[in-house]
Length: 172
Image 1 (cartoon, rainbow, N blue to C red):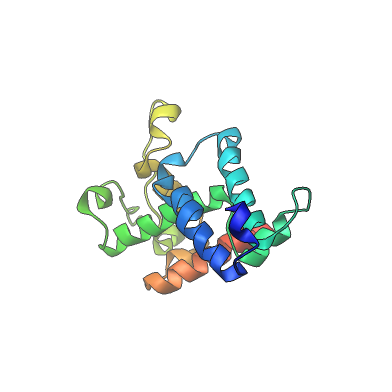
Image 2 (tube, helix red, strand yellow):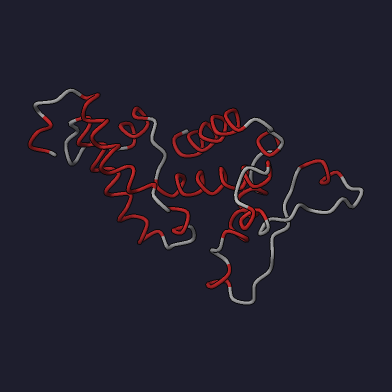
């Protein structure tokens, strides 16, 4: 791809990178939640290489402004983004039933937290085995969102605001 990059426009390079690289980074990336940063850094280096390929940035130039200009989330935030979209679909009833069954809303106890749309985080004896599963990671990430995001009802608005939230956390 680097050899033909000089012959194509930046828009064509974006399409090529999205179809060949980004799609593979995003495919089933929810199962990567909870991996150590050293493992995620390998995927992040692929993402940085793809950004350099699109923009023609040199190897030793700082990559953060390039990723920000492309409006790409870092790999770890992309994983969390995907999980939270799935949690939202489960809560709205548009996700498969077998996933929705893994999430339970917090019972009303007459406190201020009742209006915050929180989920129950299940307990596991072994953190390594159960801590990374969707039934635990989804509620954990969901409960850490700002109240305004958790109370959103429109999927398209939630998706846009969630990406903006993660973008601000990553680059501001």
